[in-house]
Image 1: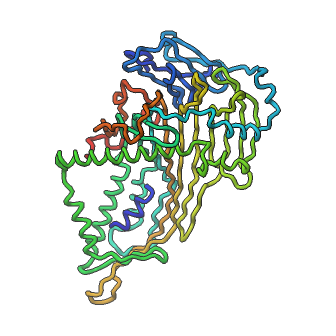
Image 2 (image 1 turned 180 degrees about the vertical axis):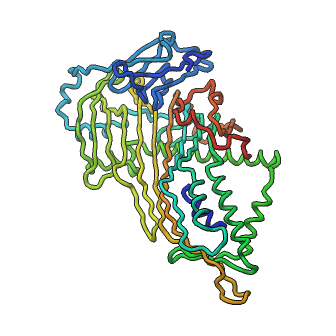
Image 3 (image 1 turned 120 degrees about the vertical axis):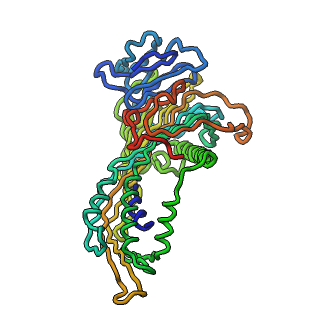
Length: 504
């Protein structure tokens, strides 16, 4: 019953362990976690804390750092030796801002003038040289079923009634999530990249649709037991209609029945295809992230490209990395889409950090009871200034999401002109009312960066293979010995409904 499956599935601590350094960064005054703090271990070597303020660092072949530098907006820079970290907790002290002479002459600049200088100084401030960067990319997909109602108006098919539709609705997971993680080397600059994957993992839940498929298989059987020989189905939803004959229905059931255990060769072929797709998709996602840097033109987050559509307000000063920064808030005017905050260095007008979110859906569509909204688009960009005075990417985050709604009737009529009596044999009338949201979140962390040889990107050798595994339960050992952004509570607690053997 492809037509029905289409509708139903539419929207569907230890501190030191070996050489590893693990800790949580907290506000010394409030004892609250500090997310996205910069943790620097050496020149061009570092990471950021996760949403819960935690980080872990494994020096791998390098010796453990003698000093760790930790900084975050609004806090004093802390330099601490790993052995001085007590019980896996690091406290940062809130900074007291003292307006220094170095930017007193600039204090009369308006917020809009500061933003203009940011744009003017981009190519002086940021490192556009080709380099090799060790990166970690985490992709999170979360779906929310806000409403899933199947209301039976009429049914002449035995077993297909409101009770069955209620069972189908109850089988729909209200929240389902999956995660993909890759460790890779990224070659190039902000404009052109090549990504070589070193290691990758996926967390997924095959049961998120399996229970629904079991119910719809039962629904298929009820239809097949009712259908007379040489019958066909007329399916209509509003003005849209399709015809499905008996052979199509039987063919689909046969395909399901013939499904069998895959051979080792078949499993290896499937794994190779998954790796190929993962590499292609990872390259695409990273390229899209890098194409969204704030200074680029014709991008969705168009703050600097369309600055005249925004209202900028200076909201004081903050302290980061022994530097004072302007706090600039922005909000839309003239139909713009975003609001947020920028932290701008008072001396060179480099952006240390930028946060933004949409204030209205970017796109909307509604027709014949079907509606869609691109209603989530938000992100963060964090840069770290190196000893040469250049700003380098430290962390990128982007969340995008859409909501889909369906409020339509669905009529399924069995017709048969080869039996005596009326051509119409059976009828099922449903009202479909769905509302489902999905959010995709990409997080990219740069751990280390080094100047890349002069060779073109096409000349960089690609690894023949990489380790890739799928899990139905979070496995903390998989990334042991590697540097990643620490998983949050949702990932640590991830358990598929069916934590059995993988299906490859």
